[in-house]
Length: 392
Image 1: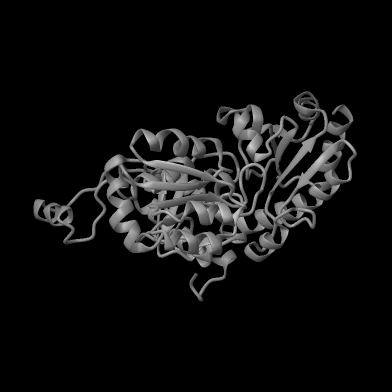
Image 2: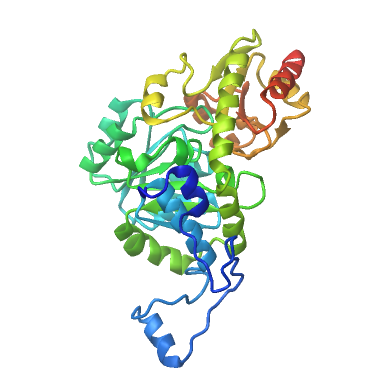
């Protein structure tokens, strides 16, 4: 992070490129290709002798502004933006791996991330091992063998498990692995994994960064040497590219990220307390609540608890569905990090395909609801939740 800008300022000003028209808002370069004054220049550009934009699949000025801004906020040397968050996760892993490699991942992953580790990687001859992310002894045992890559989320989706980033990074590096952290729930404002030893941070920019349900996007951040020499060749030749228009929308979303995350986190903490008091709720999970099993670690790693609350409704799926169907303000959606509050039933949506046995290991019962807290008045949200609880 540059000493010049604090986070709220960097979210507005970092990485700006102005054209000769001196525009205030970032320019949107909707172009697939770029031209050269002569054939000799084109030859020099493709030989990497002269810096020049070539093709928007490789790089684009609007996207470059977003990448520079995200790198400064994250405290990373470099960033590449991708078409979606899953493109970010997939490309960050596959660019680094080859047949015969070994991956160790926290079991608590988003459903599609779990599928990549459990199903896709073995198809390419890559060994995949899952561990309980909160169990350091399990990490220590799994990383006693040479490993190429570690993947984890913290807080995890949807149960908000907290992984000890520093301890896992030390174990992973001793095993020869790089550490890839999905930091979506925390955002770069509440947690900076690189400061705890992570090597690569990935995001779905669809979530808080756009944060208004408009566009898809992803980001991969890390050391410049790794981004340029390992990630960029994979990215350039496989094409998981973010569109310039989506990059522009996310740039505008970043301008209000600090305000939104601060307000949403404050509301989420109040809602977690409200739910914990209901006799119809068996568990209310929020990283910084005193009864969260990983609370002390969350406080060490995060500056606030985030925008997500997970809770378990007594009565299982039927009660959870009755509660969700009674909402008037909160919408049912599998998205999160939006200005609008969104409720998800993980067992039948985002984590349906990992199966009941794996869900049981993660504590995802049929009564669990994941609530992404928006910017509505917190009293209106608690009244909406109370309305749902009456039906549960």
